[in-house]
Amino acid sequence: MQKSCVDPILILASKSPRRRYLLEQAGLSFSVIPSNFDESTVSLSSPEIYVKVLAEKKADEVSEKHPEGWVIGADTIVLINGIILGKPGSRNEARDMLKSLAGQTHQVLTGYCICCKTKKRCFSETVRTNVLFKDLSDEEIEWYIHTTEPFDKAGAYAIQGLGTFLVKSINGSYTNVVGLPVCEVIEFLIKEGVLGRSKEIER
Image 1 (cartoon, rainbow, N blue to C red):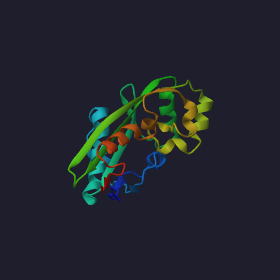
Image 2 (image 1 turned 135 degrees about the horizontal axis):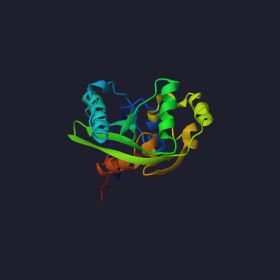
Image 3 (image 1 turned 45 degrees about the vertical axis):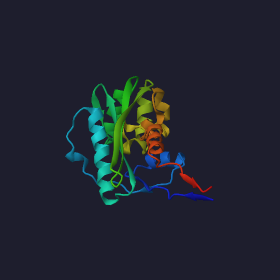
Image 4 (image 1 turned 60 degrees about the horizontal axis):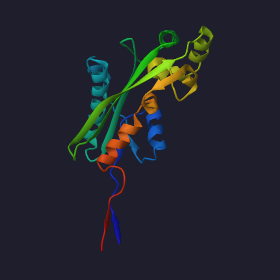
């Protein structure tokens, strides 16, 4: 006779539909409880540390309210020549960002944090992916910025959407560019026993 334990509670502390989609595609069951952490309270340091701290703060804010859950926090930035590109607030900003990325290799950094208060476990790191853009004509940039896609994306593009035509090659994790390094996240969750079902067999 087999007895199975109750699956641990998994919580995504993000309202990002892209992160939600990635976890759904990985077949995970989870709740979405977006963090309300004020990102402006975090001082800008090195990009790797900055994005990881943001992920930690987001995960911690939700974990405080749901201490028995395994909470996933994440934050993604685009880096070109040492300059962080956030989400464009206008077409002019999106245009400038895309022009700076055209024909160049940039980095996408995603910091992620997974924590559970009752288990006293918290793990975080930053994953980096190099992305090479094709040369872009003014017409291509104008067409793209007149879609709705660039305006809630770091770096003004979505690799999984219409912006796929911008990307010539990537070196590293594709899902990291989308917004969450799924390989690393699932690897940790399996290691901690959060994924899978332990079984006890009576002989």
